[in-house]
Image 1: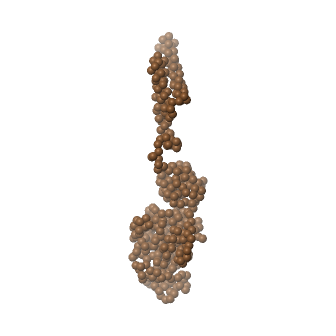
Image 2 (image 1 turned 90 degrees about the vertical axis):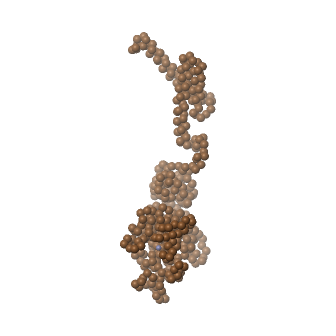
Image 3 (image 1 turned 60 degrees about the vertical axis):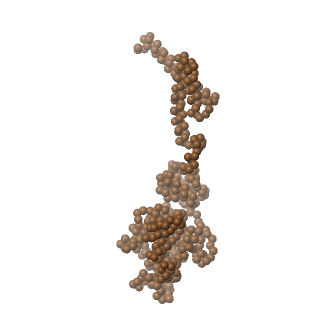
Length: 428
Ligand SMILES: [Zn+2]
């Protein structure tokens, strides 16, 4: 079965190959920040000439310039325009209460548009021939004997006279479901498919009431079988997980997930390249923390960051509740550096105090010297964070003794120089 997918270039692929792409200027320079849904349209043109509809949507000299992202022909062949997350002009004046309860206007900023090759509402000419209502010059005819297709009868409640439609083909609907599933897999924020009529009632009548939108939504989001639902047969949902792949050498998605796990992020399915909602939420956090574009995907920049080993750890939300000793025991580098600075700050004056004590003893001030020495030794042991015991007392004594030896040597040299100067051995 055909498999559609969205890749990090935000383009559409069919069985791993880019679908036929076109460019349009009927687009905004900005991106859809978070796609939340899909608007299904019908071209309301010649349903057997999707290229004609595409080139019409590339024209900038027509009234009602516009373009959708994806075009699906009656044989299921898929074309696409620009990038899937670029704001293209497909919904126009529109309004819709989304599943999050918010009513949004200008759906182009939030929804991806898909056009189905569609004749629009038909008039019956004879038992087997029909003409689209737009064809006022009577140049176009749909002959069910010649053209592959069937005509269905259905109408939107607010437009009962639009009640005959060329049915979409099974190939077209299968491709539509495949594309919608790929979009929803790539952007888990996408949670519904609506028609253009849904968001622009009394103005737009596409994609046509003959498409069962309840069945379409169940097929896309629950993995149900569209045709099983339409034919009233039970179906077993088989929703496929989204399996990501790496485009950066030296790192697989599974390895990238493990690195993120070690960095403290919440990761599910540690031993598989499946990317679900939890991993995406963690990816958004990682990207935000590291000043990368927040795509929620293992894109090139994110994989390169993870492989570089420079990614910032996930901040612990409980961190502000932890005391200094817990942080130290967790190997906090900040606490270690602060401890070190404190040690130096205390050690230097402690050595001075100890040495001053030795100096005082040499000068004959025995008791005050002894007290200074003791206080220096005691201070030296403090910054190491433990109580005075035999070992640190010994270390303190050794440091003080070493300093005292240097002091005594300097004193002896001084005495000799003074003697030399007196006796004339050295310049006075
Ligand atoms: Zn439309």
